[in-house]
Amino acid sequence: MNGNHILQWARESLNRFRRDQTGNVAMTFGIAMIPIIACVGSAVDYTRAASARTAMQAGLDAAALMLSKDAQSMTTAQLEAKAADVFMANFNHKDVEGIVVTPTFATLEPGRFSLQISVSGRVPTTFMGIWQDYIDISASGEAVWGIKRLELALALDNTGSMSSSNKMTQLKAATKVLLTTLQNAAKKAEDVRISIVPFATDVNVGTNNRTASWIRWDEWEAANGTCSRSSYTSKSRCTSNNGTWTPKSKSNWNGCVWDRDQNHDVTNTETSSGTKATLYSAHQDDYCPVSMMPLTDDWAKLNAKVDAMKPDGNTNVTIGLQMAFQTLSPVEPFNASAPKNDLDKVIILLTDGENTESRYSTSQSSIDARTKLACTNAKAANIKIYTIRVINGNASLLRECATKPDMYYDVQNANQLTTVFGTIAQNLANLRLVK
Image (cartoon, rainbow, N blue to C red; front, side, top):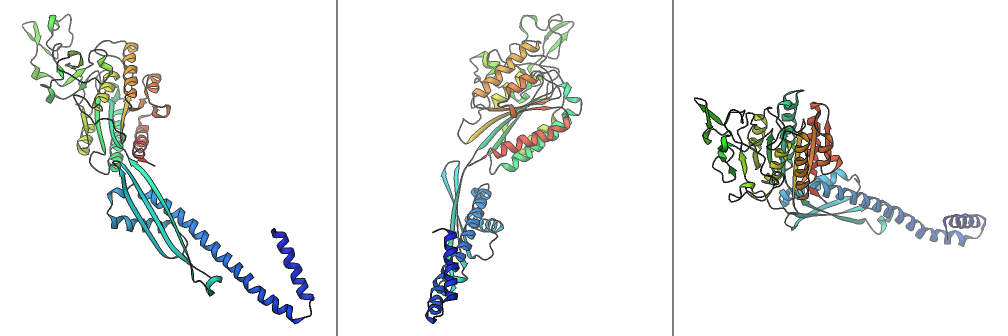
């Protein structure tokens, strides 16, 4: 019987009652109204309870998602208090009494967690109060997530052109925004580790590595007359004695290295003292950038390294990208973490110019080809790459180098760098929370 039939029946019944002159009809009708009123009243009370339960479910779902960001760092008492506060902030049914919020946090496996929240309460009845004072309601929900650690390499152009258009100043400010965002995202030591690789023609690995087994000196020692006036124009690693040019002592080395032997110049091959081609060649470039910093979670040192950057020299994107790749690799000389499901490895590559000089060439197209191979190899190693072009540079090369089209940024004004780095930083921080 549908609603129209019910209404029609009710009207007809009332009409018959109105016309009827006998007393027993009134008595019968009065008795019949009791269950009718009870049914209608019960429907009203149960509708109120159902509405409250729907709101309860929505409130606890919101609480579970919000608390999942911090649950693993809270004590049981802190979690219970916070869960109650967050739930009540999202639950607006004031007529529900005796609310009890019960959160349960669990570690499902290393790096994977769950938070279950159950809520119970009672709704006072109105029509049903004659035989039932309250309707009990409850709801439950669960958030499951994995906290991903992050290893990030910043390959940052420190060439002479970065001194123009306020680029270096803005790069420093933007990088510090990124560092602050990721520091706040880290919940414990080594959640986030970052390496910084300033590059020009060379990368500076630090003079403290003068005796490291992964540095080669055969080119430094200038065999076959490399220090002659006619064959070596830059004398920063040579000295003259009455017109005779000879190599300077290794103690004069400023820490710079350039591209490894091909094809190790575009891979993360482990360095081996027994295989010269895998080693980094000491190179005394006159425009040596500030020394790089391997992966660390020492935020003070990372910020200090950013402050120390200065623009000078020509552009060799390949060695900056390759060294960033090397810092993320679980092999000598930097020994990063081995790949794991709970670890993201990411490179941010920024440049403002086209390739101009490498160990092998001053041809842009030749160096671009090496940069392209380094990008391909890093991505094949499951490293995500963001690329940023600042005003100038090979747009097609950088766009192709990025892991996805939306991970390439073409910055036309250096003032935009803070926004770009902030966006990337937030994306990286969000990557750490996975439902």
